[in-house]
Amino acid sequence: MMFDVDIDKAVHSRERSFRLNVRFRSEARRTVIYGPSGAGKTLTLQAITGLLTPDAGSIAFGDEVLFDTAARVNIPARARRFGYVFQDYALFPHLNVRQNIAFGLAHGPLNPSPDVQHEAAERWLSTFELTEVAGQRPHQLSGGQRQRTALARALVNSPRALLLDEPFSALDPGLRQRMRGELDDLLGRIGVPMLMITHDREDLERFGEARIYLQDGLIAQP
Image 1 (cartoon, rainbow, N blue to C red):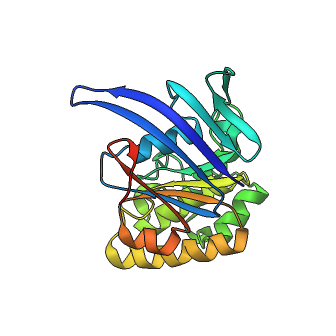
Image 2 (image 1 turned 90 degrees about the horizontal axis):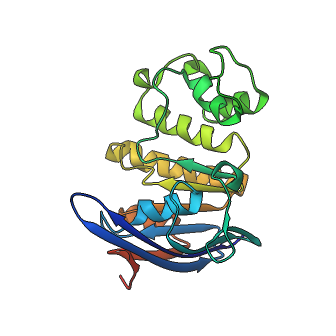
Image 3 (image 1 turned 90 degrees about the vertical axis):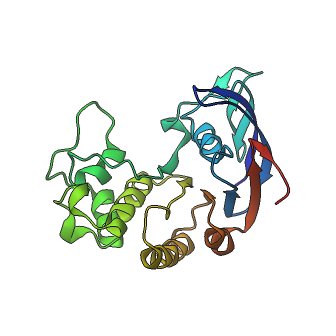
């Protein structure tokens, strides 16, 4: 499947005014967007997943147009069917591991019950070796367990692509190396396309089948 992105977005804050102008196409199974902090990598990922609306442009995945200002198309984030893992994992602190994973399956306003039993959630609990800690809350988990919980939540709905925002930055160096290996093995088994953003050279070398360098909101030469 191919990502086809051509977006423009002006971002204003008290600290600075910033313009994101990104255009790329990738047919790779593993695409890495890399560059320095503040380059616009997270904004780009949020636009692709539907959490940020560009001012102009278009976004397509395969043959489906997800966003197009000219055609007035803007598919909601949930309907884009991407699994998204935030940099800080964004786990719900008041929910246990099983509930956090099953939350990806919820369609109503209520949180899953603490003892919820969903076949897909149980499968990912087992896959990521989280069954023994399924009743624990995020603050009781190790860094690797929190990351695996976030990945399981992103994958529980069988997404058509996995979007990762600096997935290893919160881990210590030893655990970071191990989790890279685990993610590499997982992607090989499930065959889901991945789009990752990072500023870490080791992530780029491990996962960068296609590489896109972003600097000051623009695609540039590294």
